[in-house]
Length: 109
Image 1 (cartoon, rainbow, N blue to C red):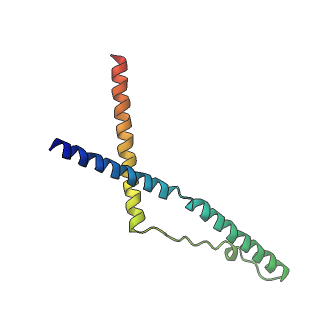
Image 2: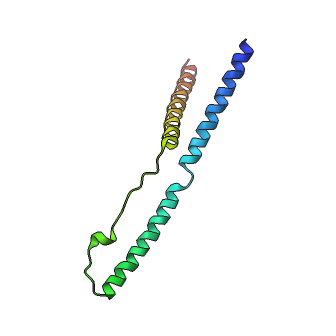
Image 3: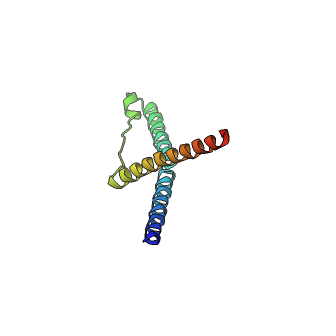
């Protein structure tokens, strides 16, 4: 019975670690850099439009060139992964604090 509980515990730990690694990879997969690249491309397009409007002597309004719409790409899966990642970070932080506290108490004795 103890062996079965030990195997189940190991499987659960491995699953938690895999979920944490996948959540970490998803969070740092380069979406932010891609978003910045897209933003730069749109900015370059707006600069060209601005220059063309100046050449054509059209009325220039700053709001026409600074249009920014924020799109929310979150869904149930990304929210779940974020919650799991946050929980894993808190648990990891607490475990590390307890480990160092125990090590500190051993060193002081």
